[in-house]
Amino acid sequence: MIRKVGAIPVVGLLLGVPSLWAHHGNAAFDMTHTVRMQGTVRDFQWINPHALIHADLKDEKGKVANWRLELGSLGMLSRFGWSRNTVKRGDQVTAEGFRAKDGSAYMCLVSIDLPNGQSMRGSP
Amino acid sequence: MLPLCRWLEQTSVGAGVRESLWLFPAIETLHLLGMATLVGTTAVFDLRLLGWMLRRERVSELARRLLPWSWVGFAVQVVTGALLFTSEAVKVYTNPAFRLKMLLIFLAGVHALIFHWSVYRDVASWDDSGILPAGAKVAGFVSILLWIGIVAAGRFIGFV
Image 1 (spheres, helix red, strand yellow):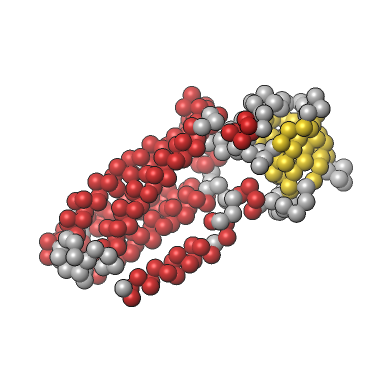
Image 2: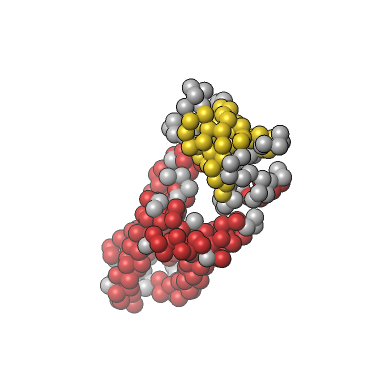
């Protein structure tokens, strides 16, 4: 019985690794506030496990960069009314989301305003 | 390898898994069940080698009853893992956690072979004993560590 105690540090070590508990949709992003940027869609990928939009967006300093916008799963997006054709290359959009903590041009998309005026939810 | 990965992604299977609403999570579900079967049965056998559980069971009897299930689990993992890989082959191929996982699986295989050809050859002489030879304990310990590493590396693919 005493020998089983040896397993406790191993389990404790695994429980202590924060990434094991955090979904990467949250852990990598600064969830305290959203950013809002306008620009042009370059690519829309309707893929598992998360759909992706690549877009050239202008930040608050006027700098344009090729942003990677991470969306929810295809099942969630379908419930929000998305299809693989909701966003197209060349669309002028306004994206709102949580920026990556590492400062890269990467965000968790909360919502996106489409050229037809419609606003779509991007993630749960 | 990268051209092969690119080709895999473009096959109808790759595209189907990548773009389907339900196929990807369904395959992930099977991958988790396969993991439970494979790692669960392997860990029970390893813990017997360590002398931490089922000490009154013969080692060879446990091997006979458990290890076929390990192989069933492994087969499920190969099939479901290949399908998941096909859907995002380029991204996953370059992922360091995926590479570590494949290396650890290879090492677990080599380790199992070495165990079978060395320590396990004279299992008859220690089959009934609660306290096993050092070689058997080391094998059980190394195997459990490798499988924890494989599971952890797999889980980290989405985070690195």
